[in-house]
Image 1 (cartoon, rainbow, N blue to C red):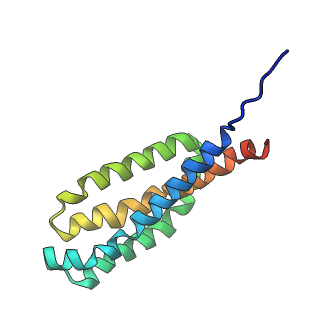
Image 2 (image 1 turned 30 degrees about the vertical axis):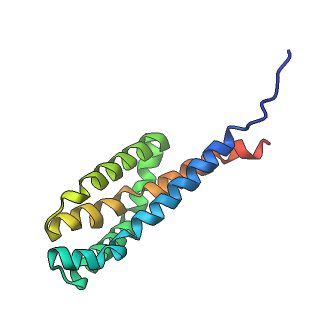
Image 3 (image 1 turned 180 degrees about the horizontal axis):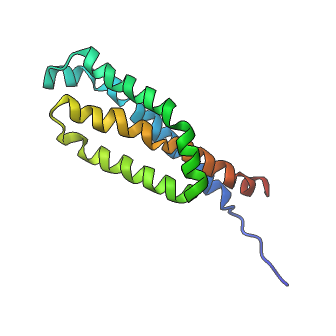
Length: 135
């Protein structure tokens, strides 16, 4: 049995994808604060209204945690992460179409935190972490 060792290890792809995903998620989560002044100027919304969307998102993020763990256990990490990333991508795609505060709340307050895609990504990373340890 002659096995040739590959010089490139697949586990590093997992590490790279996890890093990019967490980096993008951090950028996306900080977007409401970056867009606060443009939203004030474009739509006439107050800072309190815009900030309340972020506050609702943080509240839901904390409340959904136990349920996202149950979903991960029941349906598997890949399916949950795929669904969460799909919801994230769809809501980012329709973000330029918002024109009222309730739409902004629905797209940025509710869905980002209820997806819990960061937790799913971290759980998937921990499951794949053993691959990196084999080097």
